Image (cartoon, rainbow, N blue to C red):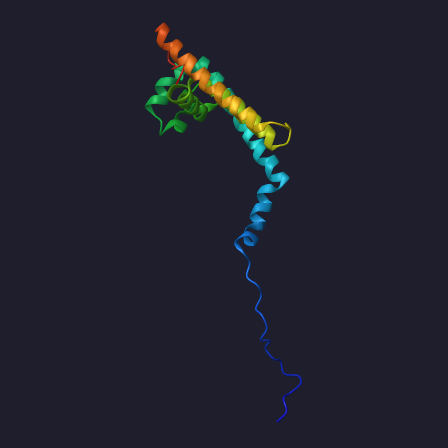
Length: 165
């Protein structure tokens, strides 16, 4: 018997080469390197920094009236939005309370500015020394926090905020 010329034979050659880990991660890496992705994340970061700056500034003026509400009802804070006077709402009051009273004091303003600047760098609005700016901001934040912490302790002022965190 002669084999049928039209019959399909399976090729016994090499199977398709397997992708390496780097090759399989290539679409994900391309996504994170995309300029549109950078712009959107930078824009969101800059908006968050502006919100944070507004909430921190408002905390200086409205913190006394918000403090009892923020400290007493942390889990149900969004339900009592009408009692909060902070310009950032309940979330802004809570965030400002933690940043200023619990963590880094008035150095939180530098953190807000750094967040805005980082967003601008991601959007490619600013060019140049991002790491130098980051280091200077964190040194400034630490210096302001320590300075106002010592000043708060030396003066003995009674205030609703802890100046140095």
